[in-house]
Amino acid sequence: MLREVEGFILTETPYGETSKIINVFTKDYGIIGIMCKGAKSLKSKNRVSTMRLNYAKFNIYYKKGKLSTLVSADILNPLKKIKSDIVLISYLNYLAELTNQVIKQSNNLAIYDEFIAAILKIEEGLDPLVITNILEIKYLAELGVLFSLDECVICGSKTSIATIDADKGGFICLNCLTNEVIVDKKVIKMLRMYYYVNIKSISNIKVEDNIKDVINKFLDMYYERYTGLYLNSKNFLKNLT
Image (cartoon, rainbow, N blue to C red):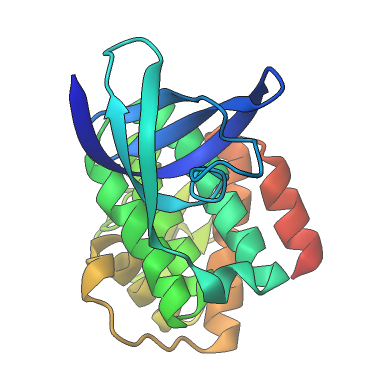
């Protein structure tokens, strides 16, 4: 059946001399494989539009559970700003790899809208680290390892939250502090905001560098300890930034 689908190309694999298979995260069907016959050829009208990390609209012969076949593809947003900057494209590469892993474990297609919204906000010029951290926190819920946003991880108290600690697994209140460093109250506030904010609704977001740094380091450590995900793109991004 011929169908039009919107999606983002997560991976591409050569197939023969002139063809390739692309794995596309789609709005309606999750991740699907699409055979792109002749798309590697320089003369192919689909050569550019079927490249990895493209956000596009695809006309395909859809086959559930099998390889679909491409008829045509048109780029929806070329992401020129991102793709002209090595740091921004490294963020995009990381988010694509992370999303690929998360959707395999979650199967919640609502992830698609969050992922695309994050990419488009980075393209608009919003802080890529903040947008990435927002998506990372939302993905923790999909992975089933989100820390409690309302209470101390040790005693369950909802008052006097003093800090956040990846080793302990979340927020810690004043009564349960041992040798943890107390963080700025803005860190606690922003972590909660990051989870609840609708990415599409963000028009401008400014976070102080010291607050961003604490949040990002916490999320890096938390992901390492509780998700089991070890992504090459993340390591490259760390070394780059």
